[in-house]
Image (cartoon, rainbow, N blue to C red):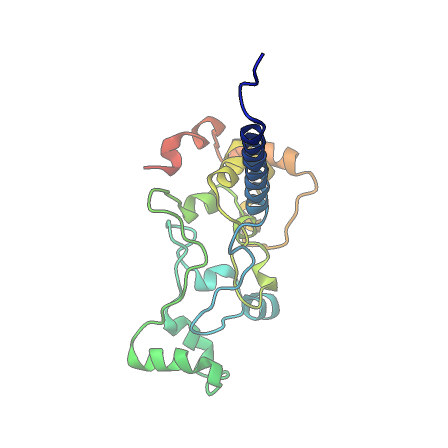
Length: 215
C-alpha cells in the first residue's frame, strides 16, 4: 500500500505537534508560577512621602484606627487628613526634607495624592466595616504592616483567594478586641471559629452567593 503522507510532511507534522505540546506545557507552568508569584505582591508602592508603618505602628504603637478612622463603619478604611499627620509633625521632624511635601500640602490646603495599595475592579463590592464587625483581622489581608518600612500589597486578591475565606470563614475569625492586633493567634482556631460563627451570625451559604460581592 502506498504511503499516504510523504516522509517530509510527516516530519513537519510531528515537529508542529511537538511545538504545540511544548507551548501547552510552558503555558501551564507559567500560569502556575504567576498564581504563586502574583505581580505586585510584596513590591513597595511609591508614595509622595515614604510613610513607614513599621515606625508609626511597630515602633510608636499607633493603632490602625487613629489614621483609618472609618474602617469600622464604612466600606472604605479612609485616608487620614493632613491635619492628623500634623498632630505630631507640627512639632516632630517638621523641617526634615523628606516631610517637605507634607508641609507644603498642608500649608497650601491641597491634599497629597497617596497611591492606593489595593484596588479592586469596579464590579467587585467590598466593605471594610462588615469584615471588621465579623471578626476579620487587619493582618488577614494586609499582613504584618508593623514590619513594613514601606507599604506593599500582601495578597493578590483574586476571586479564588476571596472565596477560600468565604467558604471556610472559621479559619480566620477572631474576637472583636483582637481584630486590630496584628500578631494575634488562637490556640485552637477551628474551635474558636465555630463558636464565633454562631456569635456573629455568619451564614456560610450566603457568603458564596454571587450578589455578596457583585452588585
